[in-house]
Image 1: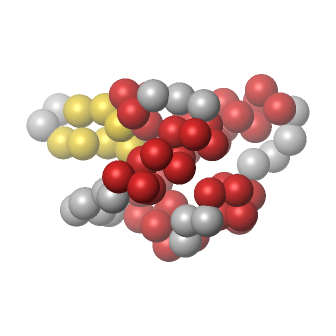
Image 2: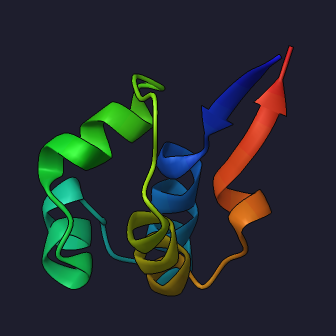
Length: 73
């Protein structure tokens, strides 16, 4: 099994919900996370994800951890 980050899905959903295009730059500004961190997450190119990173993303997207990450086969 592999851990998959659904960051792209959350960005798309928030864009549709707000009617505004959400970019990595928007997420970076709102969360204080580096764009490189977001890129690694979106591309499933990560080994570890810090607690603060998860908390900031869940707060920004108003979601649970299970909405951000899922185990895939």
